[in-house]
Image (cartoon, rainbow, N blue to C red; front, side, top):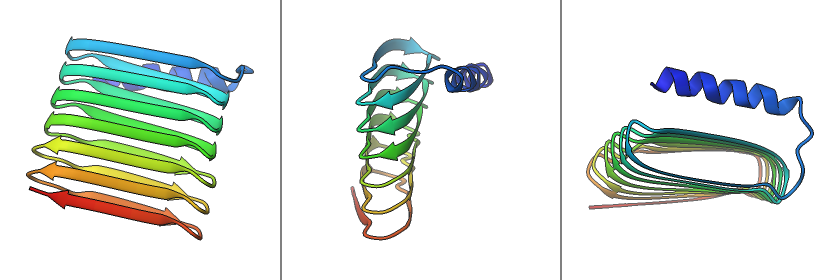
Length: 165
């Protein structure tokens, strides 16, 4: 299922690069159950994407290109995975996960971007990767097997990692 979703997300990403997207796009996806996938691709400025998934074995991926974009992922349940990518300036990406076997990836390039991950549960892993200046990254993990991999390249960046039992 994840291969089909990855192929669908790749196709959507490639298709979106050839289209002129209007500013202020809004995407809301809510899913419940088992083995669901969600993908969103937005280009422009002031875009908003909200993806919420409850259940198990969910996969979500979102990509935004532009300025002042907002991207929110929320997952509850077991064996879920969320990946977000933002390219541009003054973007915000937030991921919240609750459950078991959690994973999250946020990639941003540009300046003035903010990345945040909050995880509550067991096998927590969080990755934030930022390239540019004046970016901020925060990871909060409460639960068992915590890992936080934060990479920032550039100047004036801030990182905060909080881990606890």
